[in-house]
Length: 113
Length: 115
Image (cartoon, rainbow over all chains, first blue to last red; front, side, top):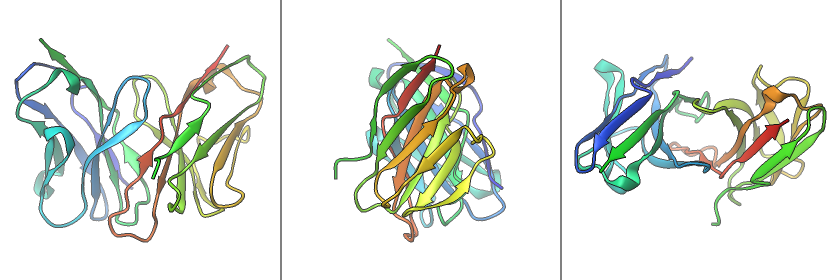
Protein backbone atom coordinates (compact mmCIF):
# COMPACT_ATOMS: atom_id res chain seq x y z
CA UNK A 1 0.00 0.00 0.00
CA UNK A 2 1.10 3.53 -0.71
CA UNK A 3 0.92 6.62 1.45
CA UNK A 4 2.08 10.23 1.22
CA UNK A 5 2.97 12.81 3.82
CA UNK A 6 3.50 16.49 3.13
CA UNK A 7 5.33 18.38 5.83
CA UNK A 8 3.72 21.76 6.41
CA UNK A 9 0.09 22.36 5.58
CA UNK A 10 0.88 26.01 4.87
CA UNK A 11 4.10 27.53 3.53
CA UNK A 12 4.68 31.25 3.04
CA UNK A 13 7.51 32.69 0.97
CA UNK A 14 8.35 36.13 -0.31
CA UNK A 15 8.12 36.87 -4.01
CA UNK A 16 11.46 35.96 -5.57
CA UNK A 17 12.43 33.56 -2.79
CA UNK A 18 13.07 29.85 -3.09
CA UNK A 19 10.03 27.57 -2.89
CA UNK A 20 10.48 24.19 -1.18
CA UNK A 21 7.49 21.93 -0.63
CA UNK A 22 8.21 18.62 1.04
CA UNK A 23 6.81 15.22 0.14
CA UNK A 24 7.69 11.84 1.60
CA UNK A 25 6.12 8.63 0.45
CA UNK A 26 5.76 5.04 1.48
CA UNK A 27 5.42 2.34 -1.13
CA UNK A 28 5.90 -1.41 -1.24
CA UNK A 29 6.61 -1.29 -4.96
CA UNK A 30 8.66 1.08 -7.12
CA UNK A 31 6.60 4.25 -7.03
CA UNK A 32 5.40 6.66 -9.62
CA UNK A 33 5.34 10.14 -8.07
CA UNK A 34 3.39 13.21 -9.05
CA UNK A 35 2.93 16.82 -8.06
CA UNK A 36 -0.35 18.51 -8.85
CA UNK A 37 -1.38 22.13 -8.32
CA UNK A 38 -4.88 23.29 -7.54
CA UNK A 39 -6.03 26.88 -7.83
CA UNK A 40 -9.13 27.98 -5.90
CA UNK A 41 -12.34 26.34 -7.10
CA UNK A 42 -10.53 24.48 -9.87
CA UNK A 43 -9.47 20.93 -10.55
CA UNK A 44 -5.95 19.58 -10.29
CA UNK A 45 -3.30 20.35 -12.88
CA UNK A 46 -0.28 18.10 -13.31
CA UNK A 47 2.98 19.94 -12.59
CA UNK A 48 5.42 17.08 -13.08
CA UNK A 49 5.86 13.37 -12.59
CA UNK A 50 8.56 10.80 -11.98
CA UNK A 51 8.19 7.34 -13.42
CA UNK A 52 11.61 5.96 -14.34
CA UNK A 53 14.95 7.31 -15.51
CA UNK A 54 16.37 10.66 -14.47
CA UNK A 55 15.65 11.41 -10.85
CA UNK A 56 15.53 15.20 -11.34
CA UNK A 57 12.29 16.00 -13.06
CA UNK A 58 11.42 19.36 -14.57
CA UNK A 59 7.84 20.48 -14.83
CA UNK A 60 5.78 23.42 -15.90
CA UNK A 61 6.04 26.96 -14.53
CA UNK A 62 9.69 26.52 -13.52
CA UNK A 63 9.06 23.81 -10.92
CA UNK A 64 11.24 20.75 -10.50
CA UNK A 65 11.42 17.80 -8.13
CA UNK A 66 14.03 15.23 -7.28
CA UNK A 67 13.29 11.60 -6.51
CA UNK A 68 15.51 10.37 -3.68
CA UNK A 69 14.90 6.70 -3.08
CA UNK A 70 17.14 6.51 -0.01
CA UNK A 71 15.15 9.29 1.64
CA UNK A 72 11.78 8.22 0.18
CA UNK A 73 11.30 11.85 -0.78
CA UNK A 74 10.08 13.81 -3.77
CA UNK A 75 10.38 17.46 -2.74
CA UNK A 76 9.16 20.20 -5.07
CA UNK A 77 11.28 23.31 -5.64
CA UNK A 78 11.25 26.52 -7.62
CA UNK A 79 14.18 28.95 -7.50
CA UNK A 80 12.11 32.13 -7.49
CA UNK A 81 8.50 32.38 -6.35
CA UNK A 82 5.96 34.38 -8.30
CA UNK A 83 2.67 35.73 -7.03
CA UNK A 84 0.85 33.45 -9.46
CA UNK A 85 2.33 30.39 -7.71
CA UNK A 86 -0.01 30.85 -4.75
CA UNK A 87 -2.14 27.71 -4.73
CA UNK A 88 -2.57 24.31 -3.09
CA UNK A 89 0.01 21.69 -4.02
CA UNK A 90 -0.57 17.96 -3.77
CA UNK A 91 1.97 15.18 -3.93
CA UNK A 92 0.68 11.79 -5.07
CA UNK A 93 2.02 8.27 -5.47
CA UNK A 94 0.86 5.31 -7.51
CA UNK A 95 2.22 1.96 -8.54
CA UNK A 96 3.63 1.45 -12.01
CA UNK A 97 0.24 0.47 -13.42
CA UNK A 98 -1.38 3.73 -12.33
CA UNK A 99 -3.24 1.84 -9.62
CA UNK A 100 -3.55 2.73 -5.97
CA UNK A 101 -3.30 6.44 -6.64
CA UNK A 102 -2.94 8.15 -3.25
CA UNK A 103 -2.75 11.88 -2.58
CA UNK A 104 -1.08 13.67 0.26
CA UNK A 105 -3.05 16.17 2.35
CA UNK A 106 -1.70 19.13 0.42
CA UNK A 107 0.39 22.21 1.16
CA UNK A 108 -1.02 25.67 0.67
CA UNK A 109 1.60 28.04 -0.72
CA UNK A 110 1.26 31.75 -0.06
CA UNK A 111 3.51 34.24 -1.84
CA UNK A 112 4.03 37.54 -0.09
CA UNK A 113 4.83 40.73 -2.01
CA UNK B 1 -8.26 17.21 -26.92
CA UNK B 2 -10.55 19.36 -24.86
CA UNK B 3 -9.59 17.90 -21.50
CA UNK B 4 -11.83 16.37 -18.86
CA UNK B 5 -15.10 18.18 -18.35
CA UNK B 6 -17.61 17.94 -15.51
CA UNK B 7 -21.16 19.13 -15.19
CA UNK B 8 -22.50 20.89 -13.23
CA UNK B 9 -19.68 22.90 -11.70
CA UNK B 10 -21.77 23.72 -8.65
CA UNK B 11 -24.79 22.07 -7.07
CA UNK B 12 -26.80 23.13 -4.02
CA UNK B 13 -29.39 20.69 -2.79
CA UNK B 14 -31.45 19.98 0.26
CA UNK B 15 -30.77 17.04 2.51
CA UNK B 16 -32.57 13.93 1.31
CA UNK B 17 -32.59 14.88 -2.36
CA UNK B 18 -30.84 12.89 -5.07
CA UNK B 19 -28.13 14.44 -7.22
CA UNK B 20 -26.31 13.27 -10.34
CA UNK B 21 -23.01 14.49 -11.72
CA UNK B 22 -21.55 13.89 -15.15
CA UNK B 23 -17.96 13.50 -16.27
CA UNK B 24 -16.70 13.49 -19.86
CA UNK B 25 -13.14 12.15 -20.06
CA UNK B 26 -10.47 12.85 -22.64
CA UNK B 27 -11.79 11.03 -25.67
CA UNK B 28 -9.12 8.34 -26.11
CA UNK B 29 -8.80 7.57 -22.40
CA UNK B 30 -10.15 4.22 -21.28
CA UNK B 31 -9.88 4.71 -17.52
CA UNK B 32 -12.07 7.05 -15.54
CA UNK B 33 -11.80 7.85 -11.84
CA UNK B 34 -13.98 9.57 -9.27
CA UNK B 35 -12.56 11.29 -6.21
CA UNK B 36 -14.04 13.28 -3.35
CA UNK B 37 -12.21 16.23 -1.86
CA UNK B 38 -13.24 17.98 1.34
CA UNK B 39 -11.96 21.34 2.44
CA UNK B 40 -8.29 21.29 3.35
CA UNK B 41 -7.77 17.69 2.31
CA UNK B 42 -6.33 15.88 -0.65
CA UNK B 43 -8.62 14.01 -3.02
CA UNK B 44 -9.83 10.62 -1.78
CA UNK B 45 -10.39 7.81 -4.26
CA UNK B 46 -13.98 6.66 -4.69
CA UNK B 47 -14.11 4.37 -7.71
CA UNK B 48 -12.74 3.78 -11.17
CA UNK B 49 -13.74 2.28 -14.49
CA UNK B 50 -11.80 0.68 -17.27
CA UNK B 51 -14.00 1.11 -20.30
CA UNK B 52 -17.50 0.32 -19.02
CA UNK B 53 -16.41 -2.00 -16.22
CA UNK B 54 -16.29 -0.69 -12.67
CA UNK B 55 -13.12 -2.32 -11.35
CA UNK B 56 -12.68 -0.92 -7.88
CA UNK B 57 -14.77 0.83 -5.25
CA UNK B 58 -13.52 2.46 -2.09
CA UNK B 59 -15.16 1.69 1.21
CA UNK B 60 -15.92 5.42 1.23
CA UNK B 61 -18.50 4.71 -1.44
CA UNK B 62 -21.59 3.91 0.60
CA UNK B 63 -24.63 2.24 -0.93
CA UNK B 64 -26.15 5.69 -1.45
CA UNK B 65 -23.52 6.30 -4.11
CA UNK B 66 -23.63 4.70 -7.53
CA UNK B 67 -21.47 5.30 -10.56
CA UNK B 68 -21.96 4.19 -14.13
CA UNK B 69 -20.10 4.36 -17.40
CA UNK B 70 -22.55 2.65 -19.72
CA UNK B 71 -20.76 3.06 -23.04
CA UNK B 72 -17.23 3.38 -21.83
CA UNK B 73 -17.22 7.11 -22.51
CA UNK B 74 -18.90 9.55 -20.11
CA UNK B 75 -19.67 8.59 -16.53
CA UNK B 76 -22.29 9.60 -13.99
CA UNK B 77 -22.06 9.64 -10.22
CA UNK B 78 -25.37 9.63 -8.36
CA UNK B 79 -25.83 10.29 -4.68
CA UNK B 80 -29.20 9.28 -3.26
CA UNK B 81 -30.73 10.73 -0.10
CA UNK B 82 -27.97 13.28 0.27
CA UNK B 83 -26.61 14.10 3.71
CA UNK B 84 -24.78 17.20 4.89
CA UNK B 85 -21.61 15.12 5.13
CA UNK B 86 -21.74 14.62 1.37
CA UNK B 87 -20.84 18.27 0.86
CA UNK B 88 -17.52 18.21 -0.97
CA UNK B 89 -15.83 18.72 -4.32
CA UNK B 90 -16.28 15.69 -6.57
CA UNK B 91 -13.42 15.29 -9.01
CA UNK B 92 -13.23 13.17 -12.10
CA UNK B 93 -10.02 12.10 -13.80
CA UNK B 94 -9.17 10.04 -16.84
CA UNK B 95 -6.11 8.18 -18.08
CA UNK B 96 -4.95 5.85 -20.81
CA UNK B 97 -4.31 2.45 -19.31
CA UNK B 98 -1.54 0.27 -20.59
CA UNK B 99 1.01 3.01 -20.95
CA UNK B 100 4.05 2.79 -18.74
CA UNK B 101 3.77 6.41 -17.82
CA UNK B 102 0.07 6.47 -17.13
CA UNK B 103 -1.05 9.83 -15.80
CA UNK B 104 -4.42 10.95 -14.53
CA UNK B 105 -5.80 14.19 -15.91
CA UNK B 106 -8.39 15.93 -13.78
CA UNK B 107 -11.53 17.84 -14.56
CA UNK B 108 -12.52 21.09 -12.82
CA UNK B 109 -14.74 19.31 -10.30
CA UNK B 110 -18.33 19.60 -9.14
CA UNK B 111 -18.78 21.37 -5.83
CA UNK B 112 -21.74 19.99 -3.90
CA UNK B 113 -23.36 21.77 -0.98
CA UNK B 114 -26.05 19.91 0.95
CA UNK B 115 -28.20 22.16 3.11
